[in-house]
Length: 193
Image (cartoon, rainbow, N blue to C red; front, top):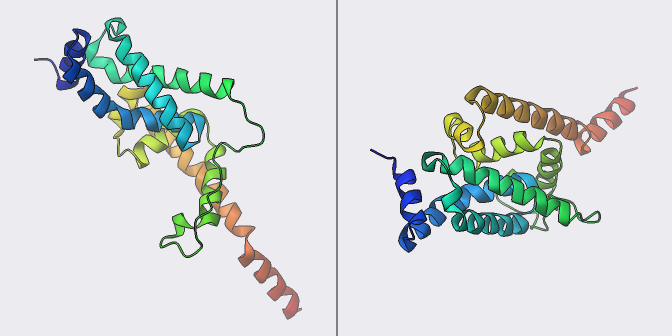
């Protein structure tokens, strides 16, 4: 028996509009996460994901293995995103722009300073590390799912996540040390002398 996703691909390739809609609903969010890991800006990632999904749905007959549709789609999204970045190199706009949210946000991650630190930290990751981190942390994907989606091994997925977390921790720890608290500790040491 064919898995449900593969059956949808076969149905959609034969011209079933409902199957195409179901594929679009099922794979738009994962496509968005992959695009975001490459282009870095949510609005651009939405555009890239939609364009890539439309391109994939228009070429379903070229998908040789319907049970590997997600990996095939992921590669299309990555290529589309890389082309987008190449075509729209913007030197004056950061890939992960800071937000102008109010300072009284409920959680620490919603505070503009923390969000800026996170976006700068994400810039330090390699593209595969960012992709695996976003799929795992935001998408809730397991390592076998990430491996199947990206066409890598489970070990490679785990390694990318480990290195991404390690890089983020080191950067954020360094950012904390360089923050106002460090300046206060330094001035306290001077006052004790």
